[in-house]
Amino acid sequence: MARFPFLPRYEALPATLPVFPLPGAIVMPGSELPLNIFEPRYLNMVEDALGNHHLIGMIQPTPDGDQRTLCRIGCAGRITQYRETGDGRIELVLTGVSRFAIREELRTTRGYRLVVPDWAPFAEDSGDRLDDPLGERDNLLRALRGYFDANSLEVDWKRMTELPPRRMLNSLLSVLPLEETDKQALLETVDDDDRARLFSGMLQ
Figure (cartoon, rainbow, N blue to C red):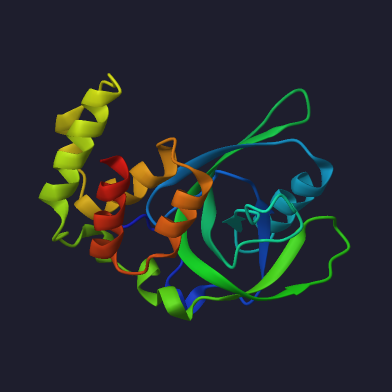
């Protein structure tokens, strides 16, 4: 599967990144996340991102109930679909590029939050490894079959198994209804096979 041509390489990732704190919403490299933007500060965020590098960092608030405190790790996505609505909203899709750690937060005048990201711990996210084999593929598929059967969910197995396993894993993490803390644990796991093992255990 060809790499999406507009996604930036590691060396082109920006020095500052607007972040969108949203509980339960994560994007992973190679996966897609639809968003509905309507708050003025986040409309500003989208406008500024489109005028610059097209990247927005998705990050969860910490689970202690304080929405101002952010988890340390998030993932940046590039705006790859964009639509303005008649009632003043923006509907967009982010395609995941690379995870990051927050190095520091900067003051802003546009309402949204801006951070200095540390991309180094996840340098391989923005490469071509999403199409590489995954050692835990068979165990992951068995866990998925059990999960979907137990929850009476229908899935197009042919289409799913045609996806490169790492892309499949990352896409499922973004869409399945996992607990916020579980999503964060999976997001922070650097090694793909370790993440697949952790995910399989959660499904079981």
